Length: 76
Picture 1: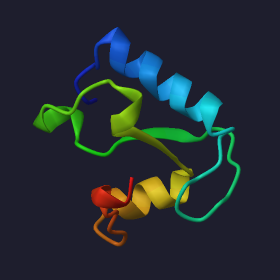
Picture 2: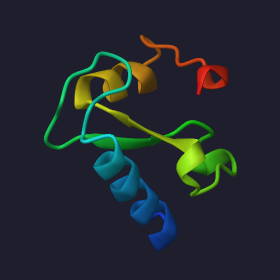
Picture 3: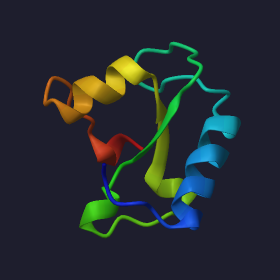
Picture 4: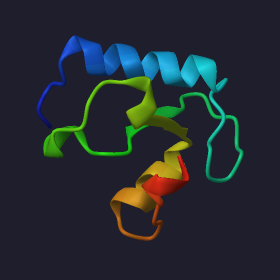
């Protein structure tokens, strides 16, 4: 199992999903559960700020982490 994120990261993930109404910003799917994703990864020092978060559906999140989807962080 992965490293547990600090509370502020989990809180930011919940907040971004609420703000974006669980809608994936890549494909537009509204998903339950949606995933809060760090634009700059937590493991690379990414912050828990809402500006560093976006909502992804489970499929787009999986595709991103498997290298099938590229997200241009400069779009956001």
